[in-house]
Length: 240
Image 1 (tube, helix red, strand yellow):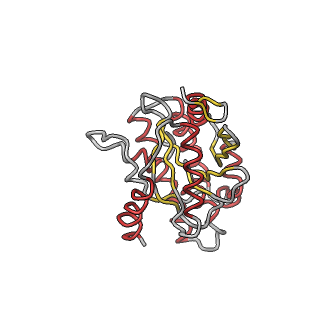
Image 2 (cartoon, helix red, strand yellow; image 1 turned 135 degrees about the horizontal axis):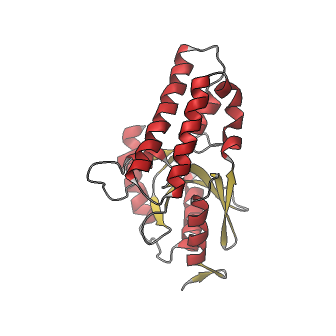
Image 3 (cartoon, rainbow, N blue to C red; image 1 turned 30 degrees about the vertical axis):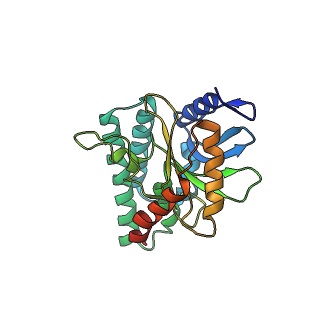
């Protein structure tokens, strides 16, 4: 087993897979020496900055309780189309209701803190301690857009094409998909990694991704530059 700075890679994969199954929302991942450190918060604290907006609408309060129950149900099982379906249904119901309030009740209050948390659910910034670079990560088991892509009748293999861009909390520019990291052999736990779309930040983003993948994956990635150019040309250019 390859060891990076004294820590077995399988141990780091196990640590991350376990963190993805905890009933806490991941808000960040920091690479420190030979260990990935997961930062997470409770469900209540995640939504607290939008509390005033939420509590002004009893239906919104109810929808948030429903999606929390569905989120916990997804975390309890490694897979299950019924769980995914309910979770995605609750998620898009919450998003739709929030957008309706923002559109029809402009005096209700600032909807952006609520919308940002809905859009960022299941994503998080990734950093290396002591470095200025930032990438983004996506948890395959709790990101609704990723799970929605698994609900096709033929249940396609895991693919990042349904989530080409993410915008974690605290970031102003989006990140585009670059690589998947398999954390468990059965495929139930994956992490998607995203470099910045900002050209000035992108090299440092790739440095963060390379550092993290070395801690969890023994296979090098000699084609990262041509792959990055191809993704940027085919995915980013049409979007922007």
